[in-house]
Amino acid sequence: MNKTKDILITGFALFSMFFGAGNLILPPFLGFNAGPDWFLVTIGFVITAVAIPILGIIAHARLQGTMYDFGKKVSHVFSIIYCILVYAICIILPAPRTASVTHEMAIAPFFKSSGLLTSSIYFILVFIFVMNRSKVLDLLGKYLTPIIIAILLAIIGIAVFIPADTMQPSQLQMPLVDGILEGYQTFDALAAMVVGAVLIISINLNNSQSFAVKRQLIFKAGLVAGIGLFVIYTGLILIGSLHNSEFPSTITRPELLLALGNKTLGSAGASLLSILIALACFTTAVGIITGTADYFKGLFNNSKQAYTLTAIIGSLLGVVMGQFDVGYIIDIAIPALMFIYPITVILILLNTIPEKWATSLVFRGVVITAFIFSIPDFLKILMPSENLNAVIDFIPLAQFNLGWMIPSLLMFMILNGFEHFNPSNAS
Image (cartoon, rainbow, N blue to C red; front, side, top):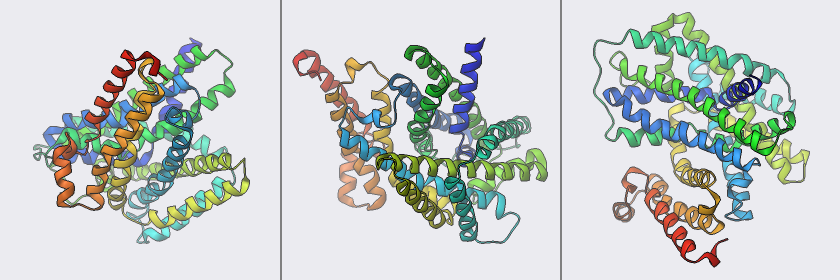
């Protein structure tokens, strides 16, 4: 009984770490555009927003270390640079997005203030909490997540049983691929790297059991968290599709979630949801900047100055980026995600398979391949050209922004075949 209780408690804690409130605006809008193709986009979205992140937790269960351990087989320098990039992306994109979501869902509907004013006040408060760690946020997190989940399940349940009379056709040409790429925007694969390490530390502090027992605990807790994410994400995609004929095509992601709340729970319920999501966004922003500041503090021999400077930089970036619309932040995140996600996915997958198939040589070869073949994906967004299009046409799946997949798989097979027939070359 205690073992089951530990699994559930750890699983719910992990779920709440993944449960970035900003992510909730993505699935309904995806369903809204998919219409009758909602099932295909759900499959794609679940692959990158649920399956890959949970595999990341399973990899953490095997490693029981930090994010650094994911890339150490490539090289020490690579792993350090990778960690810095992940944290940098987190404070530049998902952290400010929480302020933008807060403005569009909880401030703009009631006040006519600017996004800059919201982001300024928001990140001043974030900085104060980052510099003065408090259990208030932990308590908020414990109570906020269950309440938001209850409200979301109510919205999903009611919306499913009162669908619109008609459904607009799909606006997506490649629903499965669009689901996969939209899943990037949750940042959940990156979150798996970060929160998995936090989970390991917490378990080690409160659990003196063996490595194998802790591995089972983390593995099963990851499955619990994955089921929770799957239910919420799938439900939100479904109701977005069922009610896509009731809202204008110009509706934004936050507006759609609020509109669905209004339709199912009335204006009072939707207002409560928007306030709770704003609070949850705030705890997420504090968590991201605190975690990033902790990392750089450790990188510079536990320097308090490094912690403070990182917190200042993170908060200033939050003010600058958080004033923009959610849609704009999502759009400018695409190149960064096209760059970091393939490498992240490869690191997660290589750390989940048996070690005999994931030697240092395989790690280096496959990661380098994924990096090289992901370059056209983010270059065509930053600087499209006819020459680049010719390269993209040549690479399998590159037209779907997935050009790294097949070359990485081939490199994995080639290097393992090479090591199998040349055992002396194994690392």
